Length: 396
Image 1 (cartoon, rainbow, N blue to C red):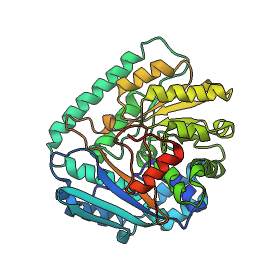
Image 2 (cartoon, helix red, strand yellow):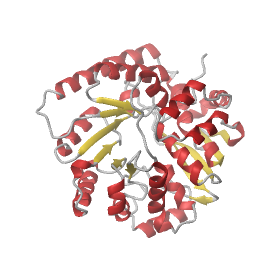
Image 3 (cartoon, rainbow, N blue to C red):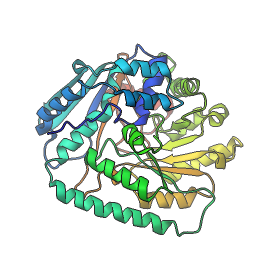
Image 4 (tube, rainbow, N blue to C red):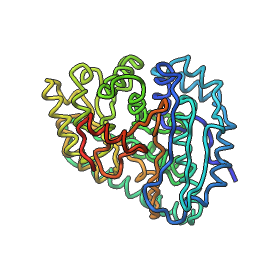
């Protein structure tokens, strides 16, 4: 059977952008990432252990191809020395372990951050594809095609609504939880061909290169979390992370993630300086309408025209949710919608809710305080309590 990972480029763009920033500014950081399944699968993931081990062995044998490196060099925000690093980069099998705990699969990547941070997306889609291979592939794909056609019909019907000040745009954010590589590719190709007025890109760098669509992504939680262990005062870690990002990208990749310690704590740090330098904000937990209204009020308080900024929504979206949020905000600000599982794993079978998150950096625990119950991620309750206290974040 063909290996699941086809290319080292088949990763989300924000992995490359965070990777470059951390390589340049914190190359000696040491990190630990842990895999978690948040829902109950149809059968124990522990049964996949041997197959996951085999797929990781294959992943660690791969190098970037020359055309892939050339593609990365063509992106104006990717620097030549980072591509030179990728030219010789290879995942090290010794840095990642796979174990079982009863029915559970335990995967940990531990080592130099610039050598282990890239494992995340590969691990997630390896587990996903292995899991869904046990279901009837033809039935699942037939249902997925019916549902994708229905989504295209919804988009065309939505386009008949009266126009608003800012256009509707959406992106594929579904690499990590896709049904399969083949289905994600078919979905992206179909959307790029049939809905080009609204579909504006994919987080999957490999598919962006192959189909000539825009690669989408800036930063994820791990980037900001890392700064909890980089020697700055804990209260200042978000400002330090945003400042390093500004210095690295000088105006490119200007969408900031807001929910590492909650939206309120983020806005307290997102002053006029950052609000002018960043193009917009990304929502990933909590009530999206409440979040968006807070963002617009913050811009208004800083006397910044919100129509010059973008709000990107990416939390458990489907098209109906995206349409509703668009109607609410599109006359007041630019919007964008990153849709993941509902594009790449809508087959009639319940998807896995799996993540692989940063849990320690430089020998210290790090944590994410979500604006939604169930998304907080930490392995050290003492540090979690301290983080809550510092940022006045309520328990959920």
